[in-house]
Length: 223
Figure 1 (cartoon, rainbow, N blue to C red):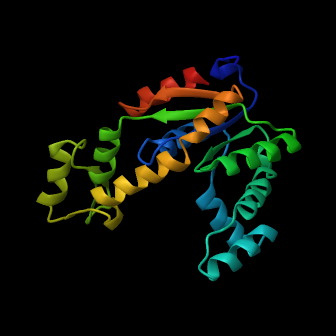
Figure 2: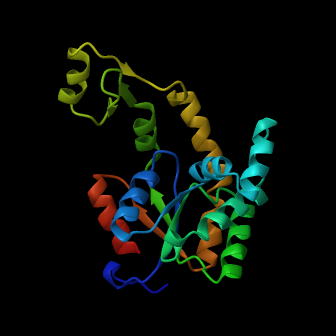
């Protein structure tokens, strides 16, 4: 696959792959601001489509109101609606989709039909033990709402919250058992996508450990 310098790019259509806690959302937001292309998050899109009452949004609402998972064809329809908006003309960053082989092949077909094929699928590679620390160590200060991590935040940052009378709150779904299950599901469903995108010659891996700006520099180099 041909590499281009960031300043030479005229469009950027990418999928960010990676386990929970790998930093996909953080890096997508930096790319969004830097390159003026939208971060297309399936969760955000679903909520927006439902709120706007789009054709696929109404379908999704009916499914969710019944307590069921939104099927792939409806999610794909919502993605198609989102990519038709003007801000996606120069590219997009798909974050959280695809998650399965079927979604990947459906997405490839959709983008090819639109004449906007995917440029690159980027895997944010992080060691399992670091993922566990990133996720199980997350805390929110009850006073300020500031996001902290008991493993990676400085002791001064942690003390600033507790010394002021705040409590470091852990999300209920950030327990080791729950996180372990999420990573297991990721491996089973999402890791096969690596071979799929390798076969399409659209796959790159970056080391997603370390400081956010260092990871971002690696991401730009890979793209």
